[in-house]
Amino acid sequence: MALKMQSPLGRARGRGAAKSGIAHHWFMERLTAVALVPLMLWFVAAVIANFGASHAEISAFFGQPWNAALMIMTILFGLYHGISGLMIVLGDYIHGPAKHLTLALAVPALAVLAGIYLIVCVLILALGG
Image 1 (cartoon, rainbow, N blue to C red):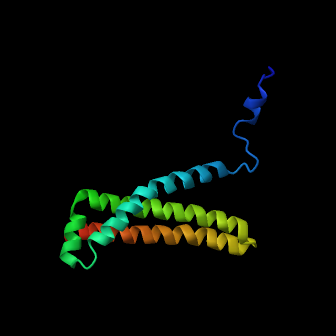
Image 2: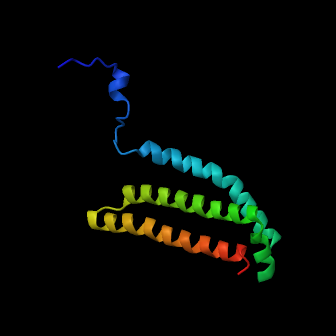
Image 3: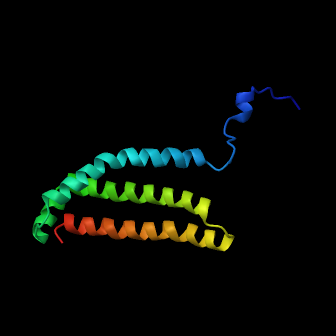
């Protein structure tokens, strides 16, 4: 058996203190936060522009592909950002394995259901429903 020579960096690479990919969570929270800045500016402008609009006008607004795509991206990035933050909060403040497991399963499940519902609503509006 040959001895494998590795530098200290080579031995340490991929072995963070938590060994749980926490850096990935941190990076994804920052990435989604940066993506949400222009999306939320668009969303606020869209709400102001369509304030008091009829159902037909809202349907026409989301009938434009860019508006429907931007709304779906806002939903997806917002929910992912929210789940990521809530999972960190659960890890820090929810004690007891049963509570933690229940909430760790319920939060993403509810977010996925909400995401599916909201995206279907946008698609129904976009397709003239």
